[in-house]
Length: 291
Image 1 (tube, rainbow, N blue to C red):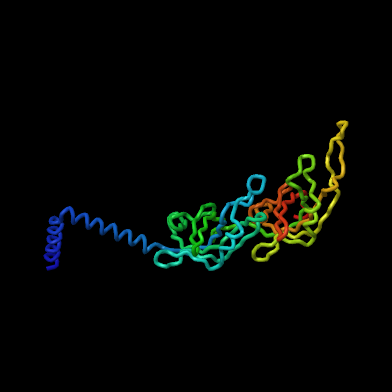
Image 2 (spheres, rainbow, N blue to C red):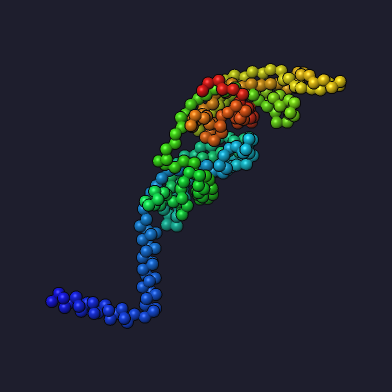
């Protein structure tokens, strides 16, 4: 009985298959593809991960000097905790968990966003993608956060081990003047020397102290001059000073090297940005006082 029923069913399906036209086969193939697309789109494994995104430039420095590019102050104020990006169905794809910024120069900032992303996990490659873009350290992602567009570099990914150690170090730095010539590169104008005082601090947007000026030493500036008879002598500059600052810096130690604000190496002859509400200077490190 069972065999007869099975033969009838097989005979029925064979007859149906033989009766199918080309148009019928096209519909079947399209339906099969639609099912596969539906499964891929709606049954993928979604995973929320937290990443840190540097908005704007990928570094605060350019070559051996300071870049004047990067987000303006007004753009930094456009970000806040709770901003979201949603898809067409209203599902949250990205949410800002934290906003961290600091003054890069007198009118530019560096901005870091901690963002929770709704990513797709690929078990085969052990990677995450966001809007089709791999979420990797060094990759670029685009965010549409409540009418604010942000394109940035991924600097940290949840679960990726970062071997760093926070330390507070002290260095001596000498103020300079960009307008001086090669014979008086260390001299600082009097009004600029007076603009920085012991106890001044540099803070981030959270109010955390990044740099504190522990001491300030001012000496008469010596400049090299050429006399009328061709002799080269040193003389005291009446309108300039040599200014040395003792700085306490909140730093990160990575692989034996110190960094300020994640990407500024603290090295002898390296400029350190000091941006206060009243002045912006870039003293050069001359020696380490503590490690």
